[in-house]
Length: 471
Image (cartoon, rainbow, N blue to C red):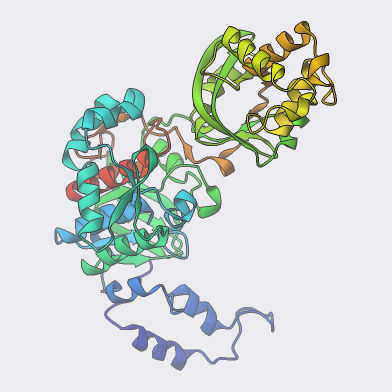
């Protein structure tokens, strides 16, 4: 077991290293390899950490803590700060070089910190089957409490479309800073670059955690390792194998908010084009399944955008049942008869123009060309030469422009992934495991399907705060 660094300050440790290791000594026999001094400097994190960590690295001779939080992401930082505020000695074990890596890029770097739906019942409608488990935790620490937490610490929030709340600075790193400052204020200790390798347990109780930096013990443990979305930030689902070993069921994670892959080249050729106010419907083996209204973004791999992302989870189920097709209704406010009348009036007013030029801003040129091709109409055809049959074919295609869905993109493109521990295996009033008597779970470790728009981070704030209060 590696002892903690002790009461020595950074300066004292640096002096100790300087006495026992000459600058020119190397590790092993490689003359160009790292010096022992640089190796030990890395080992004990003498390279400058981010400023918020320096004040609270008060190591002592013990490796035992009141609470150990495994994972320094959104819910882990919230849990640690809350526990520290209650006077507990808290340690965060974070495998990355710094805490909050995934949080710092969330929302395109702006951080959609929560959703400003203050009615708990309406808020819970966005969490599907999990809603019945979440009323109690959201009543303890809900949207209003999240607003109060950040704004009382100097970070005002602003509300944008769909009730999405962002920091007024539009900077995700500012959210990380507030959480780290809260941890510093309450003397939470943080060890970065510290990967947990094993959780030792017996008789339904965790005894210690073994890490790349030694072994640590605690009265209680919070597992806040996150799910599988954005694996490039270290969110690689480390907690799921440990949870299985601890006796929990783990529903296999799938990307639940992720773009859809389309092989048809004309779709990919529209890369960067957004069409608004349309309806997208999905069928499986020709049978209508569901539809949504909104905007879609064409990409080099298929289709994306908020509307498409929210379709991904049900589409993933349909793909297991058969062939899935998407159908775009480009004029959802008009039925087929009304659209035919509108097109006829448009044509009557521009009889001598080419058909490709009469639409103005109604249709993107790339989409129009695809519709004309499917209707067997040349884009160079004068309007007065379009037959009734051709016009009717075109109207039908404008109401149902179809293409097959090849699949979902992987976890690397996922905004949110579902999967994890069923809520029935956790006391959701305390976040305490029903399998392990000193373990608490948070955030993306729960099997909860939810949309984008701040709902995932609110789940982190809620579960993290409660776990920190109870652990």
